[in-house]
Image (cartoon, rainbow over all chains, first blue to last red; front, side, top):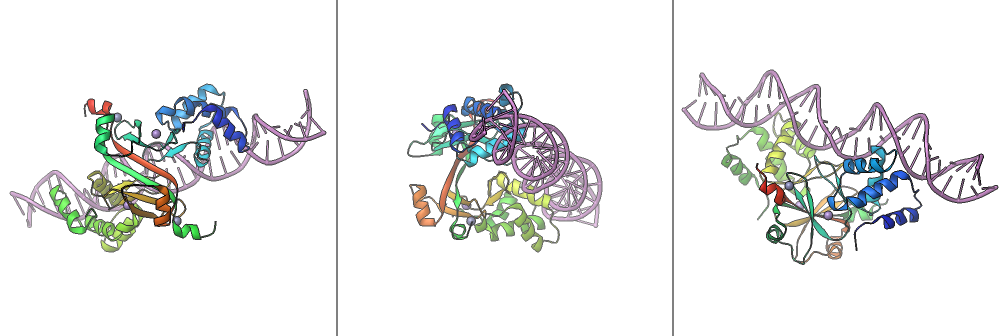
Length: 144
Length: 144
DNA sequence: TCTCATTTCGGAATCATTCCAGTTTGTGCT
DNA sequence: AGCACAAACTGGAATGATTCCGAAATGAGA
Ligand SMILES: [Mn+2]
Ligand SMILES: [Mn+2]
Ligand SMILES: [Zn+2]
Ligand SMILES: [Zn+2]
């Protein structure tokens, strides 16, 4: 199981010595309840606003950033579109619609052929993005 | 060979009925000469400015967008970092350094294990991004 | 050379995200 | 229950890459 859930996220907050605030709980709820949708900051903000008396957009951004950097969720970055957040940490491909922005999970079946995906998921692939992020050998040598 | 070169890009412009302007030629030169570096708009702008008498940043953006949308080059989108452009259209993984922004090409050798990449390319992978972009089945049904 | 659709220009607008300074609030301790 | 203080929150301003726009320039065919 590599999908986020409420109890686990709260545990992780405690382990890191972070405070349990109504804002964080509301954001966690919003993330868990919309985990299938790859929500963006605005959706999280709207959903969290329903649960907690007060939440600011600044807090939502700070929290999503914190969670991403801690590896609790995955940030999907875009150019002229809001970043989206993925609560599924398992290895899979995100099928991203260029027109409506829908993001569909496609779990890897050993081989990954765009044509297979089109057939099995009804999604026409026009462009692929495969990126590995980390540190280059020069930066590894360099201090801090 | 899936790497951009000058003659080919010019041919493609002609085929599409686009005009050959000094600005476009300068941008093409800059793209080809820096194709290993995955350049961003600013670098292209600076390099192109040396070759052509006048180039504006607006034109650089418009041209890079046009080339990307035509599939001549590939746009790599980021969050708080300039977009970068890739002149290698073959299937490969871009290893992106989180600290310095360097982008290294890693051509796929059948299997793609982060550990192999660390060993062979001296790059430590901390995060992977695999995305397929295109159109979802709902959007395919919907008109234009 | 003439014509005009295309291209370019520069400055303003956009907009998601970050920053900041002041205020509030969890949490551990008495 | 009350205290103290570091951590968290807030709203508004700042940021910065990219896009938009109207006006001026120009490539290319006739
Ligand atoms: Mn996903
Ligand atoms: Mn590349
Ligand atoms: Zn769609
Ligand atoms: Zn580096």
